[in-house]
Length: 557
Image (cartoon, rainbow, N blue to C red; front, top):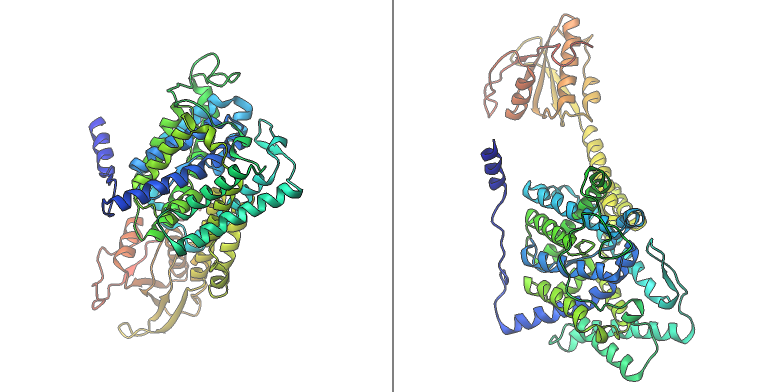
């Protein structure tokens, strides 16, 4: 039994592509581009990680360590080189209730369990189900996330000294006003202009990095009084250390207590772990598809699931809040030229260097420069052509785009994607349910018999419509149902066929099925409906009539 299980596990695990450069040439120019892109991403990661730590109600280093570890591990073994992962707001809003009620050590335990679930999903190849997400849902996801990124930047326009960490995230705060607000807006605009205009002159340095650098030099050199990274929180710290969140006594962030290693703890963290694992994988896989479309390269969904899970397990044991793919930072990386694993690795290592040795310098960077970078990300991420698309696609698809966008902003990404997929599936089912109809004629091969030529799929949505096609009382004694242009799909279809056959049987008439496709024949045979064990000729040159055995599914009712 154990050997069989191990054999099945080995069969499900395919060798990942861990090449550092992938298809890119290993040249000094490529390495320079990747490293500078990584530096740009690392600078943008700092305020994001700190802000999301505040949202979750934990110490800023918990977010920074997560950004470093998750970013490094997914860059090394992830399924899509070019993607950037780290602490995200989508996960932070779920974590806040757990941290507030049980403490940060329970969060670390939850992140470990979350990672195990994600690795299991990758081993089982469940990442492939992301293909079921329709394109309108993808557009809504992109637009909604762009709006969320934009709204998240508005916090930087508040006076950092008035923002209070309430234990349930960062709250309150007074908006900047007067000269300080105008100066902040001016520096944001300057950064955006540099990012927009520099590529027209030179591409030696990534435009976002140049925008941050020029704006920072201007602010520091002229002593301009605007909020800086250091005003949010100190990012100074040491190397993340191994820590087991289970046991008794105080944890690494007193007064939070360690999580007891028992079933009660499992009951507490399991619901959160499942939700976090689902949100993390959905956001990561959708970002994987988006980056793949931008770079023209495919990514490995299952490999990405395993990488995200491994990263979260490790992060949980090193005092991090866990994370997933970050669409904003991924867009910065791609737009800056990052295409390989080097950019993600460099971003993680730069971030660690900021924490350990360069915090005094990084804390002097004005938030306006980083806000300008993120605003340009918003402009580049939002699918502006969706306004044109919505006028040309079916109304239901346009509705799904708007619905997913709104739900992403008001709730979270996972809820929005699930809602979008359900609405799209229901719309598809309804459209197919309306397609079922029949043409009737006299049979050429059986004189006196009536033929119903069914068109459209027969499934749960069209089962009632199928039953209404037949005129049992006025039909002759022999009726043929021709499925040459139809397919029998599910149990509801089998039930509908049996119900119609039973009504003809009660009327003393015979109903037979003709031209069943191979899959329909197999489905009906397995259910026990066919009284003849024979296959039609694939080209329908020989028609076999199948009598229907009734009482198979409706017996006992």
